[in-house]
Image (cartoon, rainbow, N blue to C red; front, side, top):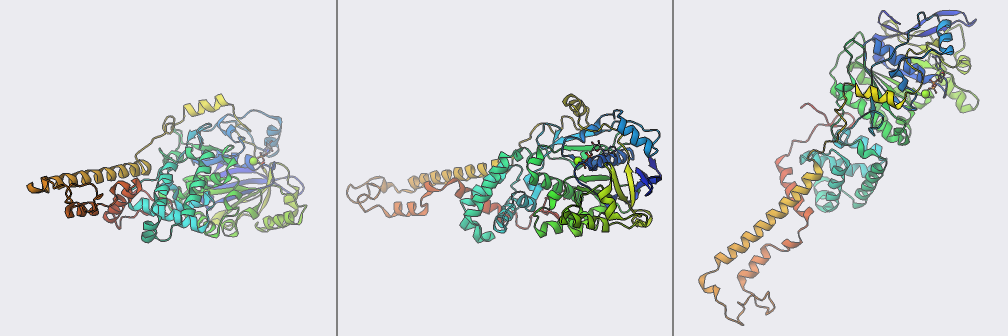
Length: 529
Ligand SMILES: Nc1ncnc2c1ncn2[C@@H]1O[C@H](COP(=O)(O)OP(=O)(O)O)[C@@H](O)[C@H]1O
Ligand SMILES: [Mg+2]
């Protein structure tokens, strides 16, 4: 199914239903991205499955999300089914080989795959703000929190790190506002509530260490096949924002970490973004601009991104225009809005005089699609009405024991299973506060001891009623010496833990000036410097 660096997608038909020719995806142009669209039940997931299979066989690692649990079968060998055999025969796929694929299962919640985590720091303020749907004011405050953490060497790893930093900030809004710009207590409280909601949704599992290593989703097997990373997303889809933010974070990580490769024979990784409309729904313009930028620039890192969604209108024009390889399954065209969508979908193709695109899109059968890929010199091929090939791996889900077996022999087995609670902002803030409080206490005792020592011999004697009996001013005539000492440490007992912490923070801020960390295109922390 691999021909001169091309992946076989299926076979096109002529208007009279006779066989036309094989349709292929050129590996050289797989980093020019793609789009798989169509209504529910028209064959998008199967198209994703056969593409993932072909990339794997070509030695290209794949990352994809399993939104409904029906993609997991890619880890198991295909089972003979009449309708699959029939499709194979119709399109002249002979032999029709069944095959299982090297799959690594991942899961943010750690149930259906190896745990995948990142740190708050790496996620960065832009994506976190998006995750929690923050207002501009709240996002501003979050930015200050990150700045504060960066400048003070406070690692923000998990949610409790961020929460302890924010509650520290709440105690110091005045001082910090003077240093960093306005910080409102209200915004802080709203962010705290947002973090609590995230925690309740199970996102606390996702933030922490060990963080996902990009190399682990770019593996190949000993026999030269690309590993297929399958992210269990059925539960994750209950929090669509977390789902979309996570995938976007992963894309930006790939973008930041991988070196430029220029034009290569094949991509280094292909990334499928299923339910891609979630990424763009209500997204602020700044985010869409960044996504557009990442998609445009990641090409030169050898990463192909394939968006999967129902409708091409789900994807903003600036992103859509960068998706060179198109597979359009059937769409309905009953309502005016649907008709508009079909019209847009039809107009994106290089027309084929043999048929009308608009009409074809509404008439396509299940597992059939309009296909146009980038051919020689990156020019889009003329659109063809194509019967997509049947998968070699199993169609549908796998059983729990099967999944457990795959996970047990995975190359990352045991590497991500346990949480690692490294020293981070939460512990450090706590410790700094304790240390500062202790230093104050020591200082106070020393002063007291000094007072004792400094007292001249004569003062060891008091004259009752002449102000020397040190009755805490009840007589109204305390000694000058005493009065001075108590003035020099006003209210030391009232110094709160946070007050002590800010002093210690301010000291280290001064010492680390100009050492602010570098953040990447989507605000995630850049590594390797
Ligand atoms: N290329 C194909 N070959 C054979 N059957 C297919 C093909 N594509 C889709 N089908 C059939 O259609 C069903 C629905 O396809 P699916 O990819 O799950 O749709 P979608 O993801 O668009 O909702 C599949 O379970 C399968 O029975
Ligand atoms: Mg599907």
